[in-house]
Amino acid sequence: MKYFYFIPNILADAAHCQTDALGRPVAGVVVICRERLKGETFSHQAAVQTVIHELFHVLGFSKELFHTWRDCSSMSQVTYSDGSGHMRIYTPSVISALQKHLNSTDPELGGWLENLGVLPGKVSSHWESRIFQGSIMAAELADSSSVRINPVTLTALQDTGWYNVDVSSAQSLVWGNGEGAMFGSLSTCQNKSSSFFCSGSGFGCHYLHLHKGECKTDQYLEGCSVYKPLKNGSECWKKENPRRSAEADSTGEIFGFDSRCFFSSLTRQNRSQFPSFISTVEGRCYRHRCTGPNRYQIHVSGSEWVECPAGGSIQIEGYQGSVSCPDRRLCLYSDITPPSDAVDTFPAGSGSTPAQMNTVICRKHSL
Image (cartoon, rainbow, N blue to C red; front, side, top):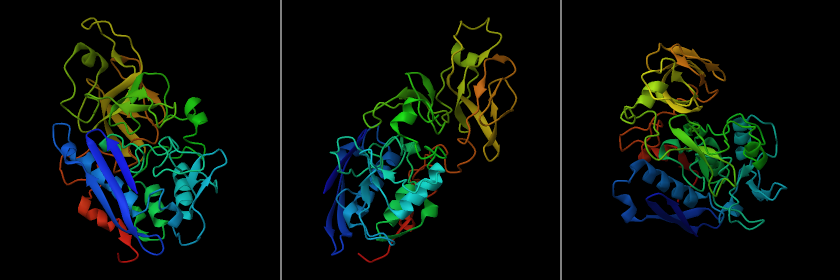
């Protein structure tokens, strides 16, 4: 079975081509079109992530292989409809990982599978994008700095029954953390009950707060919208991004490695030297430093370091307006950092090279 997977400038093809008597894949192939591996838009990190994505398909995360999974506690079918017509993976480790991630005791909390273009009762080979934004096994990989090999995906491979998985090597899945069993449903994204979703077409912050973002939807979100990184100059952590302007001076932005995106309406109080700006709430870049778990200070141009209480908002001396302080997004995840320029680092903040990925997934059986 082949999987054609596309992200900008990358085209990949993967297939498992041989299984043993129990349905376990023992041979496979991944093809990357070489024309996509050169040019100014080439990203080494995105290319490696695409290869990892395709390898997971070959290893077992595949609609062609779900029926052959042999988790240690059950020999039963692993994919079922949840009653609303959405297909999910119901295996012990996946349910447990989702209960922990979403802070829910729901015993039926299976892993949602993408339903775009899938016939009723059939399954896809990807996680549902509304629930697993940033996951390595989403149908469309996000910006390479936000793609994660998360615990739920690794536990899914564990429940194939074919691998010993070191789940402690997983990367943080920030998307939806602690949001409850209904997170990602169409109702939660449309009624604004979760801060991970947005409405309208305004500008704000990507949920990892490394980038400024624009509220947008796509085919996989089914009408729900999220803040997606802007195409040009959205990275708060790039010191070279800002262009000197009266507006930048007025809003107090600072770009650099320790800068993050904050929802802000700040404008300098003495604006006689600047053109008139409307003080709207949008994503702006300010420096931050951690003082404890979920505790941090921020630094706005011309100000001192100021405590920013998570979940609250603050005003800054010399400015009118305020800055919102995100809750459970900053100073909680040690692996959520700006990407390294080193070509042997994958993914951002993991400290693992592609060769070291062998320590994450260990075969129970020899191939």
